[in-house]
Image 1 (cartoon, each protein chain N blue to C red):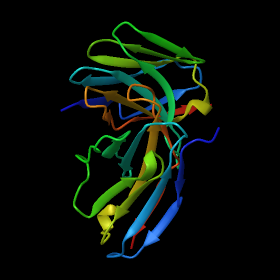
Image 2: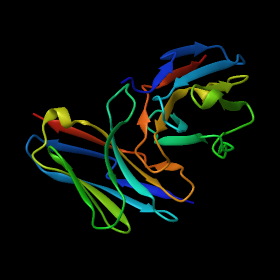
Image 3: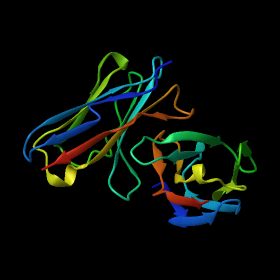
Image 4: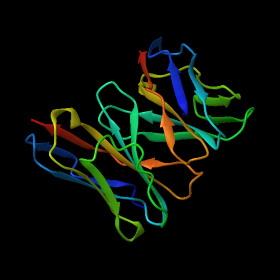
Amino acid sequence: GAGVSQSPSNKVTEKGKDVELRCDPISGHTALYWYRQSLGQGLEFLIYFQGNSAPDKSGLPSDRFSAERTGGSVSTLTIQRTQQEDSAVYLCASRETRNTEAFFGQGTRLTVV
Amino acid sequence: EDQVTQSPEALRLQEGESSSLNCSYTVSGLRGLFWYRQDPGKGPEFLFTLYSAGEEKEKERLKATLTKKESFLHITAPKPEDSATYLCAVQGANSKLTFGKGITLSVRP
């Protein structure tokens, strides 16, 4: 069985450009999370999807950040007008139900130059 | 707001030297405490879930324990391949996972 897949693995973009990061969760997992990890820092919560419920967007740092999850499966995190402080590793995780363990992808390393 | 504090920030051990990593937490309605291992350039890898005080889980040289305020990850006779960053996370009533900053473990041969 495949794990959580994220693409691209690395992305270098110019300041001011928009980027899209993709997450393919484990098949059948109803919950999906996005986290951000900066160098030497812990995981910063961004957004959480659970089934057909409204997502918990409380961790999105600004209105430049948005995410969607289509058909309860694939998720895309979009960052508009990227800034240098957006440089980080973006991690996606999925879990079967809300109380089971979460499995992470390998992350997308975003560098804004 | 849920909070997780891990200590120490970094730990250097000699191979075979047992020790413990600490995770202190405050959470509204604990639904689970999770331990992960993260290697450089990789995503976190799941290790253990603990749900209630007094619970213990073991896997090879690792043993995780839980009280009402903290969790410990005990490492017995560590090997160099145990070198990694160990992350602790809690889940409260809102299903959000709150992580600590992690503990970087180095085991010297």
